[in-house]
Length: 288
Image (tube, rainbow, N blue to C red):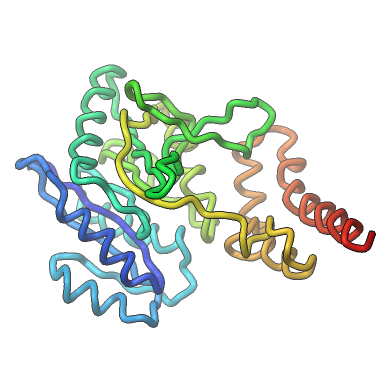
């Protein structure tokens, strides 16, 4: 009986977290699969941990200090799942709602692609926006060779599609892969860990595929309130670009050194230059 451990992290999104898990436990699973879940609550003040324990007694709830963010919280949940030696881990964002058939389809894709490649593979699920039906997250490629930090989400409507890395919304990782690749990189805070993990998977000789079809719903994050938000002051944008959810200089340097080639420092400098130049340009336009 193969075991599948769903791994999540959450912070003050009680209703969404509960809904995400409701979709998981309502899944049309193969009878042979043993489902378990690991959720790190990163110090939520909205009663998320208590609500999880009440609604889903079988879920293992771990606790963070409030400073783990996505990468740290997922590292915590993954470590617990790895310790139990589950056969598969399924990454899931707490704002991502899988379809009833999603897990079955991901497992089927893993079987197909493993047979095709002769080795273990990672499978990314694809999400869409519930309002527009547009693809939002999933497996990604970098179609322009020199734009090493500008991905495009793959839309695998006509069969499984090979990818360069993936968003962390829905990702199926078999034990053979995680035993060799390990956990998410500890240097990262919020973002970057999913892309970095995918690149590390491929460096270890494994391949990544986006499973055919669409497997869940998740709205795309927009630029409002981020360092790309042109309505904010330069000071606020600078604080955001250097902050945990932007491009904090240290973790961003780790990522670009690993994955952007000998000219990595140009990629490293880009978000800071972009923030300064775009803010100055907008300021001049407003003054004129």
